[in-house]
Image (cartoon, rainbow, N blue to C red; front, side):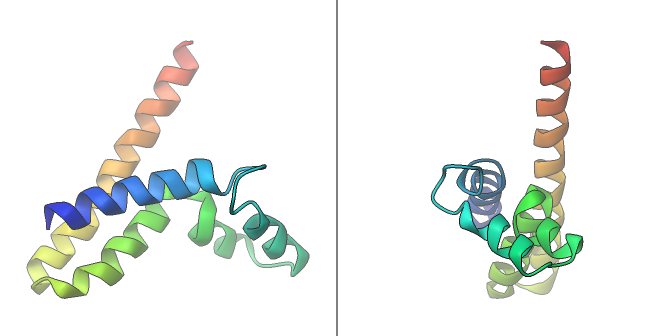
Length: 95
């Protein structure tokens, strides 16, 4: 369970804050969604929100776990990424 939690958090944070930014390898995804007038919720789920991306990774990968561990893992990933985002915002506001 711990590896699902750790990899989900790292992958989601990297995806949402680095890989889909302008000039990075997956910067075409936001442009593609804009071109087809995708709803804002789809943008949120696919690349804006690290909690959404991390929750999806943990949810789908978590089916390899028993149900209680699966639920706990998804909750921990979302909580951890929420704490990371709030800490990042707090630090940026102070600088």
